[in-house]
Image 1 (spheres, rainbow over the protein chains, first blue to last red):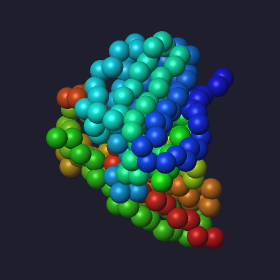
Image 2: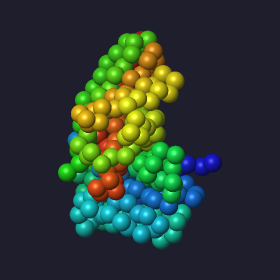
Image 3: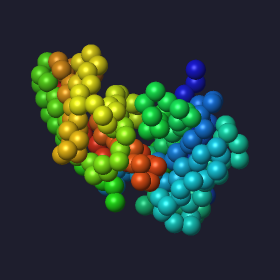
Image 4: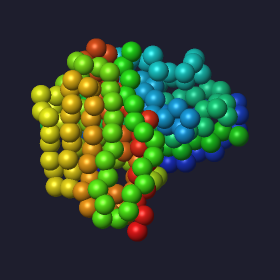
Length: 117
Length: 111
């Protein structure tokens, strides 16, 4: 079975440009999470969806960040305009309705490494 | 608020045991987790423990939970070079409904 699929794997862009990161969760999973990982701040939860509905976006840094989940098989994280401090690895993760390990069993994609010059 | 703390780095020799420690704050956590991240990859669930257990063993992995002290540890027996990775402790917070990760412990295994 395919895991969580993220694209692009790497993106290099210039400050001020719009960046769109994409995620396809595992089929049958009903929760989707966007995380950001940096050396300085570690792993930060940006937003998560349950049944395509945003539940908690308190981790979204500022209005330049937005996330959507138009259907159960697709989500986007958009940064507009991008800034150098947005450089990080962005992970998407999904989880099933009832996992063997409780609601904390997340399946992560391989990440999108963003570099903003 | 909820917080999970880990030491940042551990270095061991191949064949030795590794012990990675973690403390957490949310006493309502029902499950506690260890995730592993290999270079250039996403996190993968390594093992987990239910909060009413003290210990869980899974092949070379032993998880110990001290609920009174809110302390979780992961022991890797006979550590191999392939175990080199970042290990994240995480708790599921019953208060916020979120999975809270620690900063991650980088395990370096020397041959």
